[in-house]
Length: 330
Image (tube, rainbow, N blue to C red; front, side, top):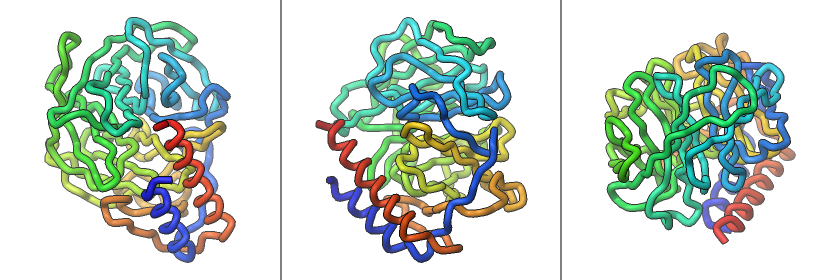
């Protein structure tokens, strides 16, 4: 097991007496369960712009060129989209929707810590009709100005359409900015423009493009976008999840939804930053909350105690996650 997983387990044990217990969530934008048995490694989440209450997600590596539309009111898949016109996906880690109802998929994962000399982004129109279908996508080659790296966060600014990536590093990464317009011929060079004080597993823009929410396994940060000169604004109320790798704003911007890998995994809803406790989907009740996360100063929330059983589950989940990642790296 790598050192980082032992550290995370230790933090959970040390904070057992101060972490608040999880609260139940409701349906729809209030939270839901991914019920499709084909969705076992949900690694990204994005609220549909054309279909209210529908969320797009996808599996991690090994699934194929597929994208799933999930009805949040039932948790059931209402459409599976097969991407045509691209190569074989390697490690799809993120999904985001741009200003013209176009879906962007980030095939940007690298479990070998920077072995791939380039990664890919796929772009396709959001289908107007929700049914199983094949859609032609455009494929873009991505390289980083300072060399290959692992990443799990891809975001498209809702006003400008510019694409950004945040790399995944245990001691904190960077926000990378792509070209003003992606080119399907040649490589698109992404340049680091700002540090991100988190071991980032996903990110999302608020619908107005003024806020950037970044999550990790055990914490999160929200930033004022400030034209790309991001300014840290506070911590996110990230729920504890077995392998939390997805985040999105609801279409109206009032809620942040957090997803996790695993069969029958829960999508948990929390009030977006700046919303009062009364507006929170769970009534302001806490779920296990970490502050800035690894590399950003690990803040522990206040509130009721976390049961010993919950701590055991948390540590066990982290251990299984570590072993799984080691197997994948091997």
